[in-house]
Length: 440
Image (cartoon, rainbow, N blue to C red; front, side, top):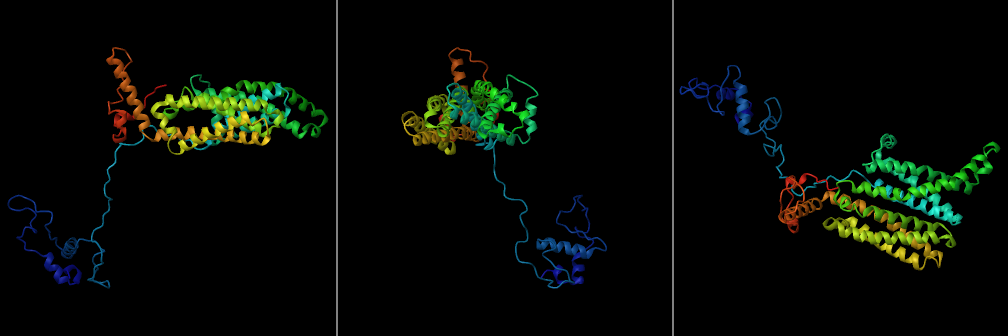
């Protein structure tokens, strides 16, 4: 038992009172040096305190290790460690293997917006064709589909923006060099004709005219008169509505989207045509599905052919379309689109069941295409190899051109020479690779 724990004040005084000639009692020694940190200096009137503090230091603990004389259980120490670690063990972290490009903050609202916008544009085009060829059921279903799809896409867009006023604020300026600004104005110009044509079909379907007062019945006739011009206006803007979202994606620094900037708009247009034609085959009578079937087959063919060419032109970055969740979605998209297109061409005109099955497969394939492309872009932003390898390839190509006596332009100083692309799996990107190149 230590003296500080015994509760004997005489014993404490014996420790606190030291020889006046000792080194602890004289802070300045004869040789001019100060005492060491461990020396104890007695101060008059505080001998007991000095004893207690010294005892505490010797026992290696604070108030939890000792008990005063007035408390029960004095002289006992709590079991356990005298000292606790207040700081966790250090772990080494660095920028090696971290993402170079930040993924977009978009959620599932955006790929649904991409799909619904394309479906609206394709359905407007199909509705105009049905109107001009005298197919009333197909015209009605296509126009209503276009209006519903447009409303759903706008809701998804506003939900992603957070506030409807953000969409309104984008209309305050027009920048021809900004895909977002151009797309906003295209969507704004497309909406009135789409809504007028769709509202006319809904009014006819519900026979709204008989519920109107006599003095307001002219509104029904006016709406019917404006339906065809509105449908034609919406159909003329339909290709832009179906493709501008692809231009918006490829204008970013996300590797998988940017490397597909040549072909992705055509992929989206083909996917939109396949989806709208397929849905027309599902909703219209078999006798009127001719234009829908033709649009679906053409759209599916364009999507599959251009998508294959896109993967070839993307080079190393195309790996993001083949791995993980994006790979599963893109494989499902190809299978559904190919089966749906072939079935629509060969069996769609024979029996309605085949037409419905083909149409549903094409719609599902279009959904998988939009979500697959979206997820591939996000994955390529998370994995630094999809940023570093193309940078190295461009740098090596410029150096080879310089060695051949050509003038490829100024070599970027933001990229430091690294090992070949084949060694990337064992070599992490360096700090110089964190600067994004604008290759637009």
